[in-house]
Image 1 (tube, rainbow, N blue to C red):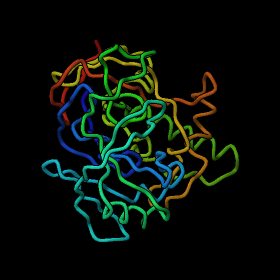
Image 2 (cartoon, rainbow, N blue to C red):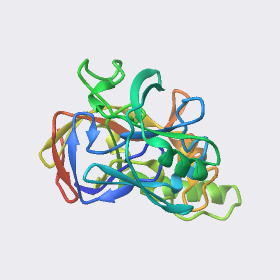
Image 3 (cartoon, helix red, strand yellow):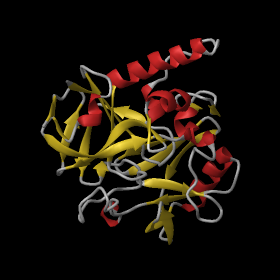
Image 4 (cartoon, one colour):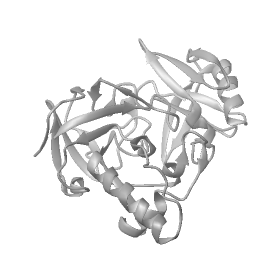
Amino acid sequence: MKLGSIRFYPIKSTAGHEVDEAEVHPWGLAGDRRYLITDRDGIILTAREEPALLACVGRLDGGTLTLTGPHAAPLRVTPAAVTSTVDVWGTPVELTDCGDDAARWLSELAGQPVRLKWLDDPARRPVDPAYGRPDDRVSLADAYPLLLTTGASLGRLNDWIVETALERGEEPPGPLPMHRFRPNVVIDGVDEPFAEDEWKRLRIGDVGFRVTKGCDRCVLTTIDTTTYTKGKEPIRTLSRHRKRDGKVWFGINLIPDGPGRIAVGDAVAIL
């Protein structure tokens, strides 16, 4: 098995992009989900509520974030000195505002007033103690530092989606791309689909990881990232084949054992 791709998302709930290698920190990949968007009331806004956010691509160069999108010229972001406390899925976290220019740029894209916020210190937010250790930390990802998926599991899911469509007399859709599931690392060469359900520990290159739990999936996976509209899949088919405890599952969450570097092509070992 090997590491097939690495993807990170500087701004939570916006488009990600692939890289050839990445630095791993205890709280996730370097630069991953260090920014988020809030609405006029200071509440996190995600693509679940506003799919157009997926048209925004944030890129980091030397620690400076640049916003690109179809509606405006690229914008380099400079965080201001103003801070506020934002509820990040039940945990109050102090974030730094990124100024009026970034707010205007994103508000035009979102079609509503929004602000861009930056997490200067990712060691500030703890992982859910039900699945992590007291010193585990996470940046602004939903719950855990990294998300892993496998090519074998996506292949099986796409087969199931075709079967579902044919059974219902529908035209089968094209294969879902992996980026719908927003993984950080994708593993190739896995013998069996969903073998990752049973993994407890693994090593990518020289970096060890422990598995916390599976990843339950939401409506975000149903958004077509070319039209920014929601569809039925993959939730409809996952509900038939991958449902338990009232949720549907695809991928696993990881916590790094420590810092290091990973690169596409690295060997992957299950420990």
